[in-house]
Length: 555
Image (cartoon, rainbow, N blue to C red; front, side):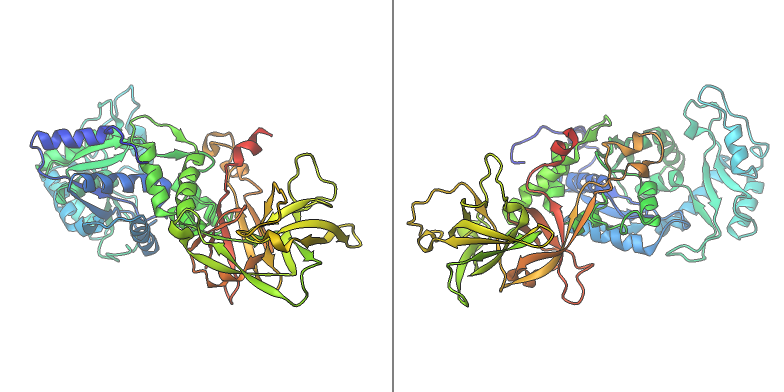
């Protein structure tokens, strides 16, 4: 959006910090856990962290929070890096929490030495039972009073692999009566005898998120650690670790996460959709993942503009997906090449056009660009493909397309008049007959014939077959996560329609994977290389030309 906006609250904080001399520059980080693919909510965080650093001359790190070897994988690391770069950002430094495992282990030893951490033999269930409730204090573990020497010895044995998963944990010794449940002796380390995607089998103990995150920020001298609101209750613990260790005083700030209508944003739920084959993988064009949106034909600029437009708030809300689609349309209207594609073809025969003859007409590539973005050749002849829906045997009121006796203009070509039609044995119209007016050629029309409708077409002799996939919203309800029952029961059964034999102009044979087009009168589409094998063309619908969803909901 071109108009200036006021500062959001994080920008105000940064400007106040710089003005007060707290920092001469700022350093942010984007810290995803590599346990799934990034989604549009992560895109907001990416744009925020990189955007703040860019605006104030700072820098941003990409750091993978890889402290749980059970769920993490190199595949996710690679996809996340690709997504960040595709959005248009480049990190200053690349780090992993696993880079700091030795330093974090040393921090743990320091806290044990200060009497601020202990090894506990209670099970996870027993720890949960003794933590109390928000209104009643917890009970001390019988192992809370172990000596520093015993704790150091037991922690060394944990590290050496002498215990099984769940047998022992390392806990911070803070305040069992704290009204903040996260301060009631939180777990710092647990045993996980699973190979790590980077450190392999070097470690069998792994730090918890709360223990690793703040210290990783401090190690990297992160000035503004920005996360979503659910981590607000973790902030006292974040600060406690930093204060007890006396390390760089990184500070945490929270903003409201992005919630989008007609989708789910939980990685766990998205993983369910993938594992239960409800979608075609993480990059299914109906998924809210960045890779899915890329495959669907969304542009980085449209996502960045959307994230800028919705702003940064402290209060949770839900954003209409129609706003995201608006920015996609706005960007594609400026950049997408125009092409003619017939999704449900029937043959149009121009009976007074010379047989075995054709001519080359000119079609603009994009009227929004200077000089229309150049022109392409259109082969025009006696036989054309048109949309079946563009012909009506008995026209309705205000019908401006083809019907017996009616005139219409063919895009970039001539005015035609319908003179008849042919049906098959089942009563379906298979051919429409018409005559054309040679003096009505586009740009040179001297016919004086008034027409109210214009139709697209492709030449029978100079067109190819393509598969077109019409994607729509994945869920039928605005907030499937808030509905009763299994969220998967609200999946939209019409979220994908496959048209096996659309007819496309042959210029599309030169399309490249991911290239965006406007199919005239039909919407915006992109070439999908995932299914385009052996020369087969497969196009995904990115978005319709107009918002038709709200109309469908009201029916």
